[in-house]
Length: 626
Image 1 (cartoon, rainbow, N blue to C red):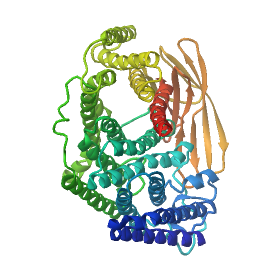
Image 2: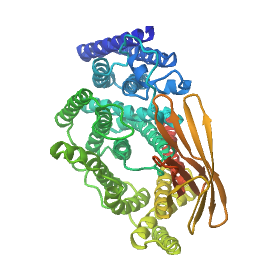
Image 3: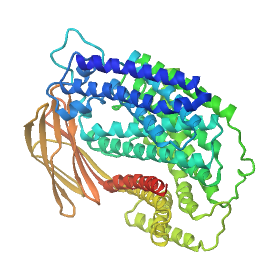
Image 4: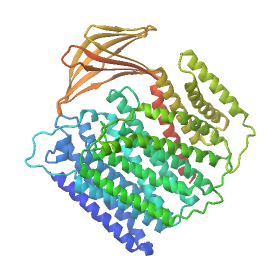
């Protein structure tokens, strides 16, 4: 109980510090030097109060303090310590407190690292950031208090959803939130720079490291979520266009586009309007993701809350922020780029602009596919779900020119380019087309669209490999990220084309056999763990080439809450994953068995790590140069 009291009053004190900072920043804005010496101390004090509050919630989970409603709803005495701690943010209230913790941490680091920036710019950025922080403080205290008191005190808690009791999901939210909340600093900074007419090359260089930091964390956060869904949910794939997957992908698409825009702004002082709009869009999409997940509107295994009051609060707060940002953009930003916006048709900036439009198209498709079912449900009470075919049909054709432009664009010069010494581009394209055709012909796959898709991905793959040898350390970060992206697209395409699946019902001792695989249900074991009992089904898998594998998927029955989950067994190699999951067929002795062979799954994960590593190289290089 003492932890809950300290945690709650720490939140209240943090809100008071935020309101104080906001008031004095406005009052002394024209005499900013008075405030400059104190803002860092006050910002640290606010961060300190939120840290205390967050630690109190962790301690409440660790000691199983069921007088705390959040602990009661999301923990249990038999839960392992690791999942007690990670359960702190595995729920609505705790995850929002984590959001607030990262918000206050980022603004403190921002002020610490921007000592060479104008004082007015720093203080105005702080003001905008405090608007967001104060909004989250009020949201937490009024509608989502993580320290609500229960009396009489329950003896036992309700437990954490078993699918959330996983190491990957324990670290996935903090990493993802670092990406989400990083966009708030970009948002506050761009509004401040726009209001003070500071959008320039030097500002672009300064904010680029924050964009890179946010982008790296968001990329890794999405990767961890994808890996978790792959082996924990038993879906047997890396991406299913689940609505909550989509709401993390949308800010990533906007942030990736922003990253390329800031590179142009840093070089030529153009595309400033694009930069401002994309900064606002990235943060708005991050907030929209929060609204959709927390409001209960989306139907997904990832969603936390089902409380309209919370959703309405976030929606109103989001509209206020959007209105504020658009007001500043239209009234303070003067576009002085009339001449510089006339790009030569064959130049690096033109290629970046074209790819920006492609990225915005991809973003629009994902946004419509995610939001359209919600609006249809509200208007006509008709429930539909938008699945992978919708996204594949709309995205795949446009992915081809996008990849070609991604391959050719970096080879062009700024301002004006030509086709001199570019013969190798045509040679590599012809090699890519021939190789793609040969691969598909060998495996009897559909030729036309698949050849074009695979050859465009191979084209980017070959060009980035060439750059490693020809340019060596020049544009190393860009080459690594682009190479990782080409590897990602190739891995996804081959994974989709060459995957195989067997779904059957088997009793103990029975065998399933076809031309490719023999599945023998060998035995059943049982195991008792601290907070669940498990039934282990042992299978012997023999492939047509004579290889034999032993796989043992599990059925787990958790004690609190009493939920049964399926745990896949996966044999991973660089070539393919062999994936098997079982479920009990109700009122029968049969097990439903799903066995899949998924080519190049490991390379999907490796490619995303390479993409992130390219961003990290760029970040380190920038700091090193300074």
